[in-house]
Length: 613
Image (cartoon, rainbow, N blue to C red; front, side, top):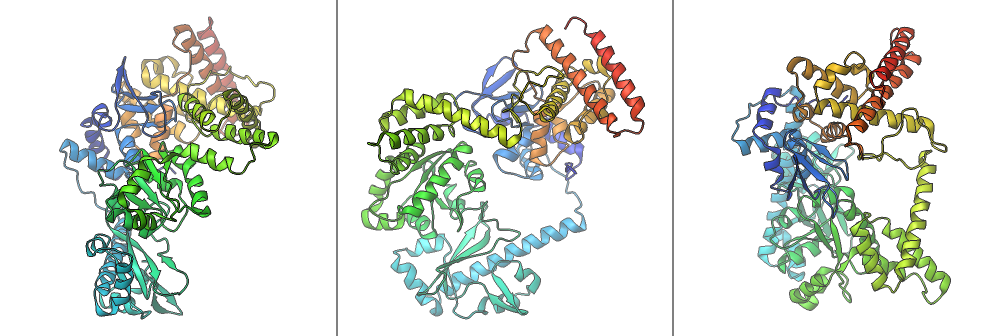
């Protein structure tokens, strides 16, 4: 079941929303220009050159016609700042000077919060323990290791570097003396248990505390001292540590005044770069770069400099990261570190000034991908050259259509001596192939109505073009009709009086559509109007809020003409009633025969109501 926003009383949430003008809030993040009754700007949630992100002050809502993200002021902060619903309410309440009541937590909520706090305390205690061990007599070997890596005392302190003693239960005994129970220690990530006996996960290792974005220690990385295996050991994932959603050094890098984020592979690379003055460096944590990392980075930057190892593994990792970053609207550039392997070696050999020069000359991620692709082909061979051009065309499909794609096409043609006409021809072939494969995968022709983008030609009621999967197409047409109808009613509540004799919340598909219809119709009956932003804040989950925003922003291209609008309204009403009739035929209502009879009669009434369209 979808989660209602019951953390604070609804009247308090409404008070905060009323005091938080969405135009004023979003203008702090996005440059907006007025266009009639709305304001437009470049969407902060996907990469685009032409503004498709709209803010409508009268609705207190935002919506992007490019990627389909929409909602109210809470939704925006939740997505942009990666906040929970309560955190977004608190931030806006602070901004507006509103004091929030402290809600009485349930016993389960208290237990969960207390448990997570305790796990953070254990990791903090472990970090303090490791820190002091490094600076004790037993930590001399680890101190020599860090000193040999040319780290200054100030850098070691900045990153909280430490040492795990050579005894395998040293930390366990220390934490037990602090009163921590075995069940918490088992789940903290720093202690493991074998046959009931507690053992340190890290021993005889140089220690690297891992902090979350707020500077709280949530995990560790440990490098073996000597020739033991494995070389590095990381904390396992816990209730407070998700390695795909946290990055080493990002807590510090996000405060940097330097442009962009330098993306590295290892702890020492990050530390060496910070010590050399590049305090915008961060690294993923013992895992490949993920969507979670990109989603985290987009909060702080629109450009990333990939500074991975220059060996084959590093190149492959960079090639995987580039399209992920692009999906989140982050421009990627690749730093060339040859003849050295990584940033640490590079800076030790050539210094910070030369690294700065390499940053300035970093290669565009797309062109880097094309160059690495070219290395696999002998372009003097006509067949291999044609195959190379075909692959470049396929790569262009990953770039958003429009100005971006044209610019990348021009650059690729120029940099790699390809005739633009060949690329254009290859791109058309690649698009056709992708369309065929999409149709086979989904059992239908590529959608006219794209998910998350209700700006498509309105399909005729009952239409089922040859070759389409009829059921899939009809289902999507029905959902579009329901969204369009709810959008029209939210914009013109008086319309509800005209159609309420035919339409009820039960006519809408179960789930969010039915929930929104029920709430909308109730508001109109009680208040005579609809508050879209308030309706969105009934839900605390950002995806639910986005879905409501999508429902209330459905549009159809070319529907500005009043007669066309009446036609769309008629089509929508008929589709909604047809869907109700189909559900009744399947026995999904108490009295199916009467329900079918009633729906048929109402469809005829609708046709008579709109005889001229």
